[in-house]
Image 1 (cartoon, helix red, strand yellow):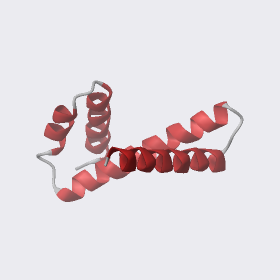
Image 2: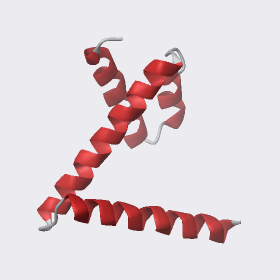
Image 3: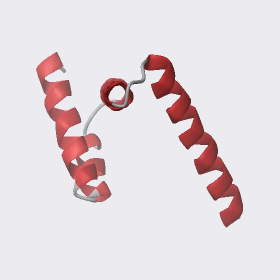
Image 4: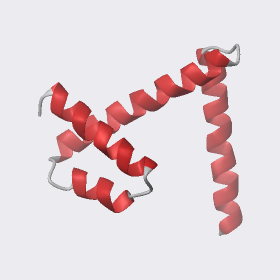
Length: 85
């Protein structure tokens, strides 16, 4: 898969997620090889990281602030998940 195709697929997966269509996102990924799905996952992670850094910078923070916020969200998610069990 070319970089363009990975980007196009990644953006389509994001659009599906924003629309709440997880089944659609799955269908976009289904025909891909495991290697290509991994590339899309890495691109999604990079996009998320960029968004977190931008959000932190908009409030006067930096990469460290973005990381701290992300770690806080992970811990919050784990606490909520443990509470559901």
